[in-house]
Image (cartoon, rainbow, N blue to C red; front, side, top):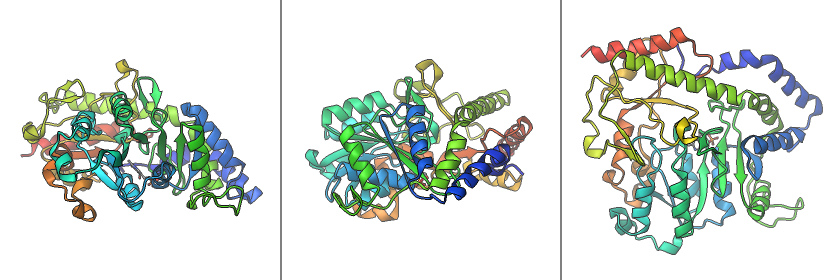
Length: 412
Ligand SMILES: Cc1ncc(COP(=O)(O)O)c(C=O)c1O
């Protein structure tokens, strides 16, 4: 049995410290906005080099708070990726705004800045169909998917040119680097999730938001407390979204190990790459080029069905001062569903992140998107498969995963 993620193994490795930290909170009975929360916010802020950091109840709330802080209103438009967890777009819709789904790069699975520019310059079919007035397009949410950051230089350039706020969805990427800069420190806001399965995972829901600008920071801080400052004096209509002290205490213990854990994940990813290459399973039809890869939608299923496309380090490549922290190790195959089945029958966990791109979700049907608006996301959703990756994964387990994939691919 090789699970997709083994949280019990992680807990065993730091049990004493975690149990003591929780007991410490129980002893104080200070569960809301206590000193543990303050300390954790300060430690994260220092760890990633952010100007301001505020704990909140989840990554989803971090996104909502960022959008509320910049006054996103019904009728506004916010650009984001169709290939992400639902929360990214859900936060936009909850404020009555309209998500603009712009297709991804095939190599990094992150939003394609060229296509964002095309949309904003009115040159894409989507620009014609959505007819978004340019002054209503307020922000962009690049998502740093699977642990690798989006092409932030290009995104910041576009944001400046078109006067957009930038909210980094760094839910999967705490500790990832782009040209030496940490995820969540480049845009106006960074939104982090500490959902238990994340690289830095709490014992329940938890999140954090980083803010660059002083005034927006003050507003964000208040918004998570029902918009009140001082207590019972409400400057804004905010929400109740706080980080629990118990979660903060757990996260403070885990934060000390984060870098070491991310390095282990990287090592495991490189070992996977090597093992797949040793077995001759890697497609060569997929070359990295500037800002993307040679694969396009027409080539989507053109690579050999007996071969795989491995994760591509783009902004996350060390020679670009980047760091991919492999929240997921995600391969592509034309026989994805068959592979998933074979892994399952061998008691090996795997998962599809994500099977249905957001632009074709039922809840967004009224927005009028067509499948073809984001062909790379459609292609990815049919081919991606994430394999087990966590620091405690043993070499022999890794080999077993690769062997099962190998035998599945040679079986037809
Ligand atoms: C890309 C992305 N955005 C947002 C979220 C939402 O975070 P949470 O589950 O903490 O609300 C998640 C995680 O689940 C995520 O992976």
